[in-house]
Image (cartoon, rainbow, N blue to C red):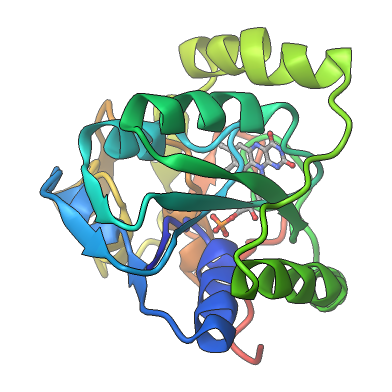
Length: 250
Ligand SMILES: Cc1cc2nc3c(=O)[nH]c(=O)nc-3n(C[C@H](O)[C@H](O)[C@H](O)COP(=O)(O)O)c2cc1C
């Protein structure tokens, strides 16, 4: 079974591509995360977890869900991480997670996709994003071939920078950067409440028709990137930047 978490659609796309070729079910973790559902899941096929990279690891919210949820049936588990640049030493933590769960770690692989972290980095314009997605196809095909043959993913060389990024920097990132305090809605907000309904953590509520963010943000960037009105901003960091969401035409 293929399970995915996705803020802006990249990981959803990769999960669905894999599912189509491997011929296995694909499921979003949105509802389970939203409703704190940690009930057991069952699959006879290997588990394939597809997720974005947050600070050189899988998102903490997904890590916690995996720690708490029993995945029964197949013991094999693959990890596919979409990223804008690098997944660092994410594999080390996933391997550890698998050993805690008594599952067989089949490796962790990265798929370079358009950058979605509008709160910190430049995001691509549409044409550039399409080009990056097209380039990802070869990697996706390689991943599919390995999964079909039940072969493990081959991990690349890990540098000292990777270790520091996935270790210390990841911890500092959650401590200092991941909060919703800088999100705000502009006057162009039409009170459609889409931001509240797509927040995977149920962290947005509407007060007097305007979104208000709580304390459980995971910085997935869904709320800021999904609205065509561009009515949500993240401090000044997002001003004038392209909102990235996986293009419909792919
Ligand atoms: C909070 C946050 C942290 C991120 N950290 C990294 C990172 O460490 N390395 C990287 O290459 N990309 C990073 N990115 C980029 C995303 O991993 C990438 O764009 C991903 O494909 C988004 O997937 P999604 O559309 O399924 O949410 C980060 C994005 C966000 C929102």
